[in-house]
Length: 185
Length: 134
Image: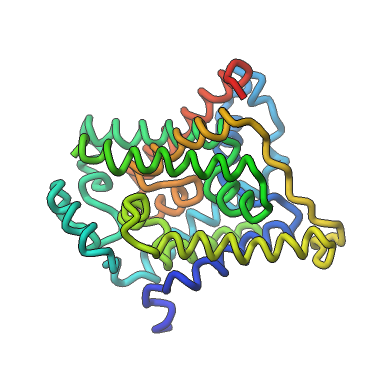
C-alpha cells in the first residue's frame, strides 16, 4: 500500500501508458482520447446543426465507458491514492512561478490562480479556462489527435502527420508558457 | 466493462506519475525537467515495440484479428496549425484530452469549464471542417 501512496517515478509512467495502449488495441479499438469531444457533441445534438456530427455515437460506446473510467479513476486517485500532492518541481520553475505571483507552486497538482473555484467563477478565470478548452477542442480535432492519439499512438507507429502534430503541440505550448502566461499573470 | 476498468487504470497511472499536473506541463514546456519527457518518451519507445508485434501479426486482438492501427489524416497545415492551437490550450490550462476527464475527479468546476470549452472547440471545428485547409 505504501508503494501505491508514494508518488510514482517517471520511468514507470511510460511502460504503464504503453500497457494501456496495448490493451486498448488488444480489445480491438484505436487508442486515443480527443475523438470523444466529437462524440459528446453528437450526443448533445450537434448533428441537427452540422452533418459533420451526424454519426451513430453508440458505435463509440466503448470510448465513452473509457471516459467514465477516467473520471472515476481521477476521483479515486484524488481522494484515496495521493495523500500528498506536493511535486518535486525544478526549484528554478518554482522561483519563476513565485515571481509571477503564483502562491502555491508545486505544493499541489494545480495552481490556485487557475484551478480554485473562486477564480474559475471570476470573469478572467472563466475566460482563461473556457478559451483554453476551445483551443484544445478545436486544435485536437483539426490536428486529428491529442497526446494519446498523436504523440503516443502516432509516433510509436511512425506516422509523419503525428510528428508534425507534436511539433505543433510544442510550438503552441512554448508560446503559451513563455509568452502568454507571463502576459496573463 | 473492459474499457471502464481500463479508463480507471489509465487515470490512476496518469495521476500517480503526475502527468495531469499543471505544474509538470509548465515545467515541460519550459524545458526545466526531464520528468514529462521521460514519461512520454518511455511510452513511445515501449509502444513502438508493441506496434511491431501488432504489425508482424505476433499479437492479435481479442477476436483473433490482426491489429492494424489507423493511418492518421495527412496534411501539413492541419497537423501544424491544429497542433499549435491544441498546444496553446494545453500550455495555459495544463489539460490535454484524457487528463481533462481525470481532472474532473480532482477539480470538477475548472475541469468542467475546460471540457465545455473543448466541446465548443470541437463543434466549431465540425462546422468549419469543409472549409479549413488541409
